[in-house]
Image 1 (cartoon, helix red, strand yellow):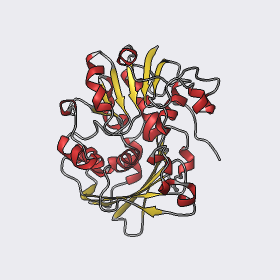
Image 2 (cartoon, rainbow, N blue to C red):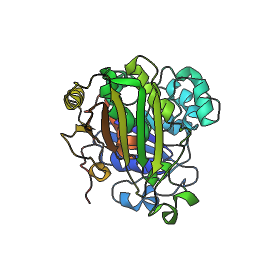
Image 3 (cartoon, rainbow, N blue to C red):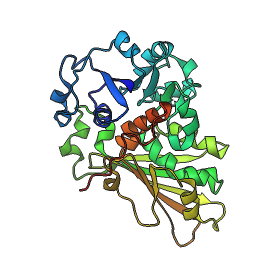
Image 4 (cartoon, rainbow, N blue to C red):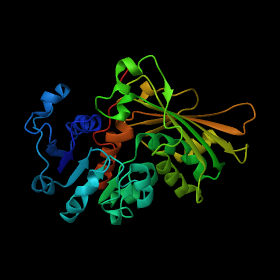
Amino acid sequence: MIRVGIVGGTGYTGAELLRILARHPGVELRAITSRSEAGKPVAELFPHLRGSLDLCFSEPSEAVLGACDLVFFATPNGTAMGSTPELLAAGVRVIDLAADFRLKDPALWERWYGMPHQCPGLLEEAVYGLPELNREAIRDARLIANPGCYPTAVTLGFLPLVEAGAVDPAWLIADAKSGVSGAGRKATTGLLMAEVGESFKAYSATGHRHAPEIMQNLKQFAGVDVGLTFVPHLAPMIRGIEATLYARLVDTSVDVQELYRDRYAGEAFVDVMPGGHPDTRSVRGANLCRIAVAQQASGEVVIVQSVIDNLVKGAAGQAVQNMNLMSGLPESAGLEAVALLP
């Protein structure tokens, strides 16, 4: 059994980690930390876990976390990098669900996240935890930078086109929408039901911090810098990411459906549809990215539709997928749940 600790178990991604790990056949949950809720039974804060999890929240402790085999950080940006060096030195593997280790350039990190990086020496070692890109490196990693939800949907959507050199890498457009849980579990006026319900809006149109993460991913396969226009939107729903992506083909004779089918053949958590329009509810609660590709009359522009549950494949489920790979477990262990409907 893998002895697991979770730092920051009170947010939405922490709750989702608990839901998945509580029934994971290869995991022993040893610690769930929260300074604000220390001493409180987890099931008191999250009643849906009653009967599945008999643990209390505890103060973060180096002794307790250091006795784990692996620790997840489900914490705000800038938290994990303060404790990760000590955990790694103690032989504990780390999966960070925030952005502390996603960008390789510490100056770029500081520009987008507004703080200096505390351990820039670990940025090169950290493996970007998107298994469909870096599966073999993940198996041997000590430190995983779990991808963001927008970057997961957008990267998986563009990847086959960029990797094959089938599109102009300087002309990529991502029009993405997220449910409100993507903003975290906090009391903010702009996220209240009365503010979000029956409304729809774009935000960060001048630049979003996930754009450099997506561009870093795609450059890895394009071999050159990519030109990306990325605009996120807030949708009046709780869970889900829908990314409608546009790219200009350099050869209109390319069979894009075959390209996607071949690239993701054998991938348990990517479903390439033969047609139609994937919706977010078809992946709600599941560790799955569902993709469809289309072309209009001229055939010059390919349109990719990519949907995920931002809390599962976009966060906690993907983190567990990474844990399974790092621990030599079946990649799908604990992640077999199908989507919820309605």
